[in-house]
Image 1 (cartoon, rainbow, N blue to C red):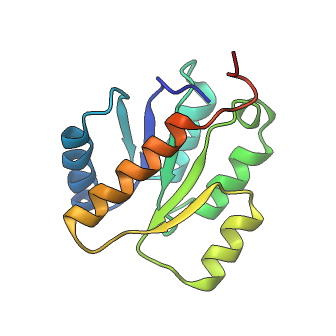
Image 2 (image 1 turned 90 degrees about the vertical axis):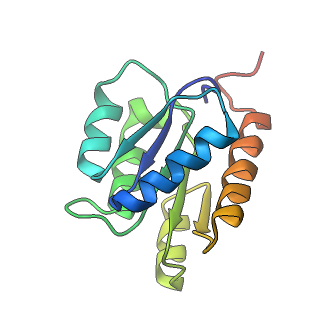
Image 3 (image 1 turned 180 degrees about the vertical axis):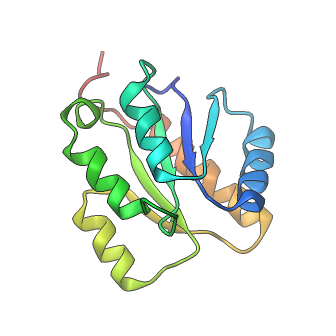
Length: 141
């Protein structure tokens, strides 16, 4: 896990992207934030970039390649799996089937988007700060 790498946000809702962008600006984390509206485009970026992302925040319900399918493709790609990029679902649906499916694909967290700006900001802050403190096999010094 590269703690200085970009945070990848996969979210097909433009309004949610704008709110998250405002939150990340207010929190002033040093990581670049890269947004994707489709899982396929995120996967293409992840397989082709030399950059190693810090973490991935993904919606579940997306066109073409949904979040569960994307997680599975990342988890079965040896080059991506060894990068130890935390993959978290950040979605409006807390449906039990989605939670079970997510954890069966070795997701590192499942969060239902809070319904207020301040709660959403607090949740993002907790997530990022947690992963900044966490160690991963390929970055222990």
